[in-house]
Length: 65
Image 1: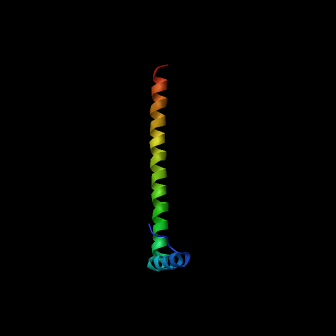
Image 2: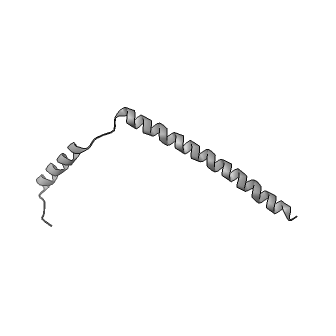
Image 3: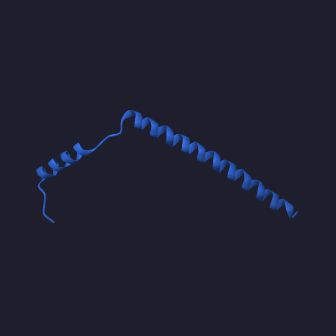
């Protein structure tokens, strides 16, 4: 692999940075709201699953005595 001089490296980095397409403020806000909504839905789902499994285990442990 050919060695790259520091000046050439800086030019290449600047060239790559100019190609980046940054998300707009609206897209960033929408993505943030979506992430919070999905995290909330997942938290509620796992809360319900945990409650159901807890009741099943308590029932099974109480069943034997």
